[in-house]
Image 1 (cartoon, one colour):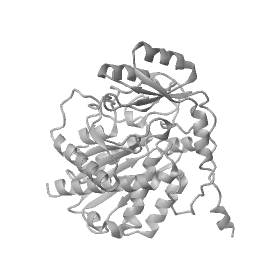
Image 2: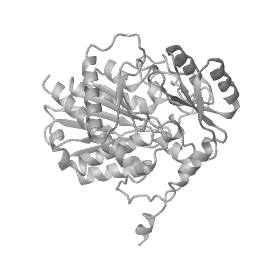
Image 3: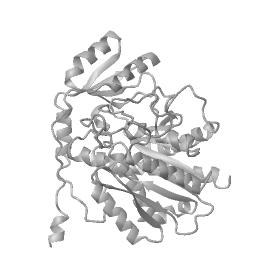
Image 4: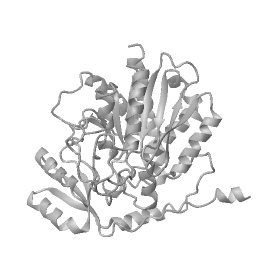
Length: 425
């Protein structure tokens, strides 16, 4: 009876009111110089780029703190930007969103539910339960402990037969804390490949899966309990301990410190004091290299983010360097994913190289996987929605399944493409 009542405990989040007066601006750069000039605001304290326009005349969403809104609006007016205020009090929107989630129930230990965004302990309990339930097909491993002593787990999923003559897809989700749909999708993928594995036997015969479903649990938990819009990890900076965390997707050892990063430890795109300064990125980088070395030429890499409906491939650090010699394969796999998603669900993914689509960002995991680990098929999914303003991060829980269903189709196509093009190469 006691266990029954425990399972009915409602989810309650204690998100403080720290965004009173914050606004989200929607800006549409008309020229490349406008886009680049706008991006210079990224390094300032009190500025948070929620999304960046990947093509001209598409909106960027930027959240601005009250104390610099006058300066920011003056900048927009003086430089003749096409802009408007998309949301004028973020705190009210966040509180409304959290209130809508207060009656969600925590699933029983060892189970997973997609009626809401689950917490880290629920995720790890579920992985441990899968290892017990499917010992022939599943291996769960504790990969690292974070600064706040949380366990980062990985899960390997196979058909239980020999791994010879198979490709491997390496996946990570949730390096950016506030992008809740990313780790949630990873668990949907895990659930499908294990509990519903009979529906995927054709791809499991060809593809093994190595998944780190929540790479930044410290930041993720902080975004549930203190600051819904937290992006980074949570380790305090050595030189300025009042600033916390590093942008994990600027911390990989590939062109570290380049475009789209900041040396300001309070910035949301702080690159860290050195490459792989963070436990999370060092662990993932080592894992990517180890898997590539174990199965050379037969590994693909996917990293999941939100939001925007984009498929992005290297290079992300610069638009002026030569494209990878096999860029046609990257373009073909993106086209295949986009067409399949549109055919079955109507969703419209756009694709291209990260830097070519207006905004370079150095130190990213997809560039690292390709340049350092030698993984040719290395992609970033920017998951739905494409909705402007606060709706991007604050995906209603009732839309979780629809996003996961269509993303699953895209990931399956990636796996088949990898097997078709690299299995016998």
